[in-house]
Image 1 (tube, rainbow, N blue to C red):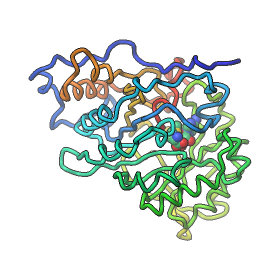
Image 2: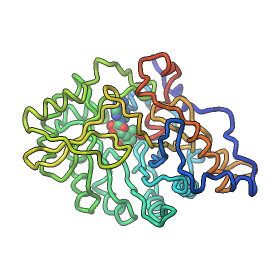
Image 3: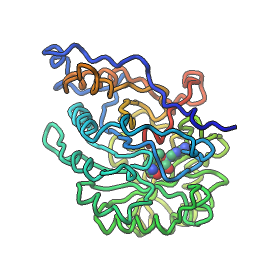
Length: 374
Ligand code: SAM
């Protein structure tokens, strides 16, 4: 069945209301009061999708049968401009965000990305600290772009790589992209000083689980932190099946059978990875178990989609239109934007991974990951 052109980004059609402009809006700001959602979770991490396009067609994210040449990506005019992204990021930082992750789609495909990085790198927290500014990429352009990203102010980055065997990796990215070019990109990023670099591997049982030990061997003693992701039921197009999820416990067992592991403590609140160290000093590995060990309890992440919708969960079905506030007939001021965002966060109830499989998780189609960013 051809599904092209029918993958619709989902959003709440009701306009997100800014409070009435003027002193009242400023007074409503949660100044001095920590912002928390209905489950007491603060807002610390903002993921910004800068493009819905990608040069890979990984079956678990943007399967070729759906995202083929007929698929209509967003027109450029619908994307948030760099000025709009930076303005929103500044407002989010005022509400407690300390970490910005640029993502997509493939973020390095967005023209002029270095300029956006430089604009975001100039932001400071209310008490004057620099932000943790990072980027997630498939690594395909890094050999050319890593040095420029670093010079623009990027601090570190995460590269996705699902195997070391070319046949396996090329089958997964479905565009024939070679492993060697991603490894060259990782080396270029290391040489540019974009460390510590993390490498994300999505594990699909029967697809690339034979790559687990080879990946661990390759990245031991390299300074790169390898992290294994369970295959998640994001979006509505990747044909997710529970029997293709290899639980992190099993991934960990296979690695520990070769090289004993010792647990490490969480490095930051809201950290998604369970961290382990090779007992022989070979470095660190992480396990992200969104399916078998849900970690909604301390999730402090918000997501800004390519066209400026705010999502409060990776598995959301609805977003909130911030671009409408920026571009409306009477554009919202920063105080009004802050009040609107704070209102969304204060009402946040999301805990999809904990509810997965129950009626409470809902049955509406979930938004696609390349659109809200990983
Ligand atoms: N193009 C960039 C990249 O490849 O890293 C950034 C966007 S991509 C959507 C972000 C991350 O999400 C990647 O590490 C990708 O492997 C991961 N991802 C996408 N779909 C996934 C799924 N169904 N389950 C687990 N991880 C997934």
